[in-house]
Length: 360
Image (spheres, rainbow, N blue to C red):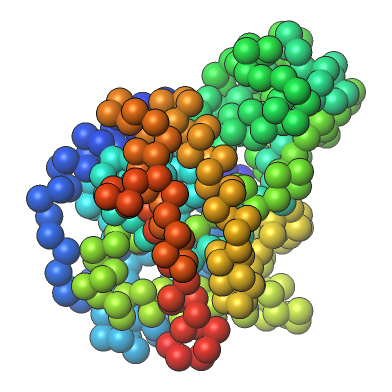
């Protein structure tokens, strides 16, 4: 179960904090090195990393390239990204939006090395009184403010011809979400699995909207420091090798895969059935070919335009951002959204392509 250490947490100060932490990291120059640190937090799409560490897959690929890779759990999601932004980690598991609004907005050039999945039902809106998003007008809605849940709500309201001005947002901790929904004062919540499954199970509740209706927009990734990657390409090769070998185990239809999924479930505080139910609400890119095709699609550019617009409108690109173009986002093929002079977030298919070609 994710609760306080899931992939979405309180982010109200994250943009400003990211900038201040980046100043601390700014004087550190990347250079060839032998030991690297990756931070992860509990979420279904990121459990392959600790499993790979425990199963010896991390060591196998690190040894191949003569390096050491430490895969470390951080109990708070936003804190893990802040520590990465400050230079404490070489890579971190994070969503596309949070990569933009914390390290990239904070001035840390960051490369999305692996796109692992996108939420395909793991995030949703549940209400005791509304039956459709249009019914939310005038309602109070509990969610983790400035998280991807907030983004999901904005997209749902937009689809219904409404805006955030038509509702009242009540900032609520993920740890308190289920209890809040059970109270008579709360009518509607926006949350993620496994919390989503719990609130949907409450008598009289109705699911109004979920991430299947905005496919490909809530993306779970492994991102790394661009300078570190440039100076240490073997680091990127090892990470890609680790990920796709672990994917082959995770998706194995026999006992090997079942055992791996049970282990990942246990690591995340659930069982095999719980983990597989979350996996069913996740569009997993099990092969590098799938991930490359998604990353090279025009749809990704459209998605990131939506994400940067939301981020700017909510002040998540920093106080110095005059518009949504302040932070450049680079895509395969040389396309850039925003400032070409300030590219700080990069979608790179190079290492995933090496995995697809069997060239790692």
